[in-house]
Length: 162
Image (cartoon, rainbow, N blue to C red):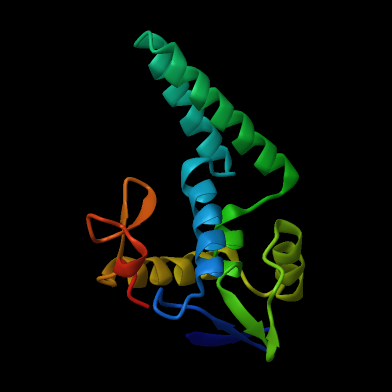
């Protein structure tokens, strides 16, 4: 685990998969997939639109429909003020000033974000990038094809070395 101080509060967060409880790992993975796969920025929305147009031009209607669904979800996220990058990182927060974080729902993490007004998007991206590097460097887990899998071919529970 690592920590930093912001707004006169000590924030402790999980920085390695070896210390990450499996329930938190699942929640983190879900937010991270939404961030990577759907996004919530204007650029993400534009990217989905470009892909949908390309699929239509290639006469791949099914793929175009899926991209339009992702565009709609991205637009909804943007309009709702959801920031999946921030939610991904905040999901990794273990405690703030010694108080354990237990509510990792969207609402719970948004409340946590409100308690840390000095935490910027740039700092969140910096911390999240470092955590992702730690996950990728770890020999137990790797990210492949935008999903988290074990580095072993069988992917059984006995392969998970915590």
